[in-house]
Length: 419
Image (tube, rainbow, N blue to C red; front, side):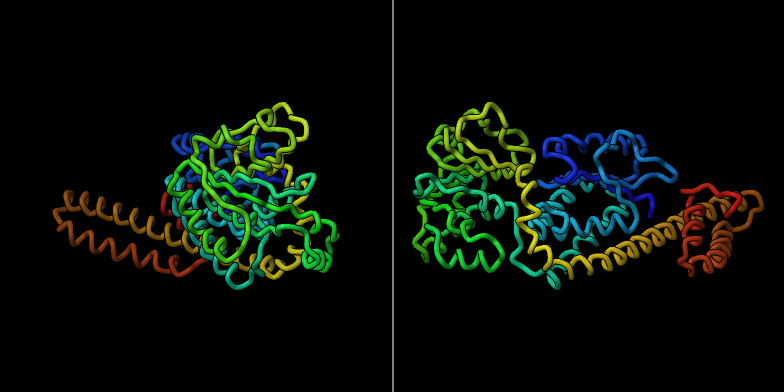
């Protein structure tokens, strides 16, 4: 299991731009073609960038994949790390659930570089994380959209804000729902709830009011679908006006909004702060960044994921206490996942040994038949019976020495004097 390695950068180790440029799939593909890695997977989310590798026996991690700020995980520590990632325990918004879908999407897109070990690792971990979340997650988790919306400041003097949300995916939808849930003004009830949670009451009193919410996405159908999902709430409550804006028009109209939330998956920036107007609030939820920190405009404000990282730990401090049981169960689950991998590796090598033995027996039977005139099929059956009788005792064992023997018999390891 020491041949499985994870090299990772998260929001605590590097900023968004550094994480986005650390690794790419083309580099992994080239290393696999050269035989320097046997399996690989690139995992990128708004919080982290990681590569998962299976290395050849006795091989070192390729120098092209090392990074001075990266953390390296192997063995059970690797399995526990992946589970913690899937459970949101390593996220900026601790305990959030978006991360599981992001990991699943990365695995689906890049699994052609995976082999039996990484396939089983990710499939087992995804199933285990879903089970753990169902059983032990306290619910009502924080999220990056929630933390971002909490950073929205009221206008001065106080008046309802006009807000534009770009992107109709998971992030865009949650951001829209949270904006719609904001109170139209500070209320005594909100102040009381905040004081109960240990926050200062003035924070709740400064909650902004959203007067209008405009949605835009590259695909018009997705924008309309999001609007239709929001309609039931709008019909039940007297809240902000909600409308849609064609994607081609949002840039021209951008200066009339008090706040813009970038929730797209664009690989390149969509906006530069020099194009903001004074007093405008810009929120960048994208990874890679959607907004360029160019020349600052007086009074304009940018809040990106890197900025959020500085305040997230304090904002989620109370919630982390509720996740302790989930963290404890993740430790036990990591051992279970690794046990499955050991079983997989053992079964894989058993099959390789049998396949190799079958080819050797067939080759020997053919040569002996030609030399002696004995029936080839009879020789093959006799030889196969002997091989199975010899291998049966080893197949009944599951300790590390037996697994090393299977590797040697499969041809992956050279036999050494100490075996």
